[in-house]
Length: 263
Ligand SMILES: NC(=O)C1=CN([C@@H]2O[C@H](COP(=O)(O)OP(=O)(O)OC[C@H]3O[C@@H](n4cnc5c(N)ncnc54)[C@H](O)[C@@H]3O)[C@@H](O)[C@H]2O)C=CC1
Ligand SMILES: CC/C=C\C[C@H](O)C(=O)/C=C/C=C/C=C\C=C\[C@@H](O)C/C=C\CCC(=O)O
Image 1: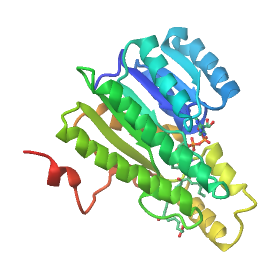
Image 2 (image 1 turned 90 degrees about the horizontal axis):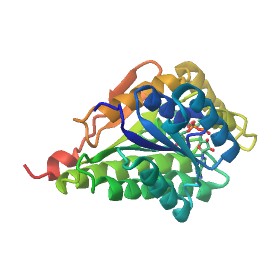
Image 3 (image 1 turned 180 degrees about the vertical axis):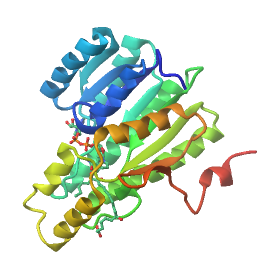
């Protein structure tokens, strides 16, 4: 898929991975709608991108993904501004085990609602579209330190795979994938390391593992994201990216697409 002239929407795009995903899309000629709950950071970033790519290439929309009204409105504003919607990355996420209900609402409800909104618009387009949901290696292997975060990321992978199969069966023209990075050097990672309420042996063990594996930088993950967006042959695939092993597709014991898709 050639990204030149394509229209993308990225949630949680004011910093970290979301910011890196926006930048790689812009570099490849796409127009991007930036959504984030952090308004000063989002506006600041839009101004930075305006300098390099021009003001017409991006729009910043203040949006809390936990708000049905705000998210719906942001999708519709994007379509209105750019005329179509080809790529959606449901990326906004938090790691707060104390406020675990909020973690579920942001990480899982936000991704599910963003996927449904994207499907609704994309299935009406001749060219369809692609949805990439940001999960984590914590969606494949549990992080003992963060059980609720782990649950949300397992949920994203299951949801994305089920939707991808349904999309094939219904011939909607929409591809769905999930991206599973290991530790990435961002504010989210720092917030967990600095969280005094998460103390003890499990935290020490997790940090030791993280130091041994070495955190990824956001640009390495952005390259993997680009691969998922552009490769039109991988509907339903789940990509894992680690510092040492690089980016690889996850092999599941049961491939629902092969079992259920009509021949
Ligand atoms: N940093 C890491 O080690 C890893 C992160 N991830 C996932 O990557 C995604 C991005 O995380 P990072 O860039 O690391 O975090 P980050 O904290 O640097 O950036 C997250 C962005 O999401 C925004 N956000 C938070 N709640 C929001 C809401 N309710 N509505 C809209 N925007 C909201 C924040 O304002 C921020 O701009 C998350 O889903 C996270 O779980 C996955 C694997 C590893
Ligand atoms: C300190 C974690 C901070 C934030 C979470 C981050 O956003 C994230 O999603 C990171 C995921 C990284 C996973 C990387 C490797 C996982 C390896 C697993 O096999 C086990 C890791 C730890 C084992 C200890 C345990 O939790 O039981």
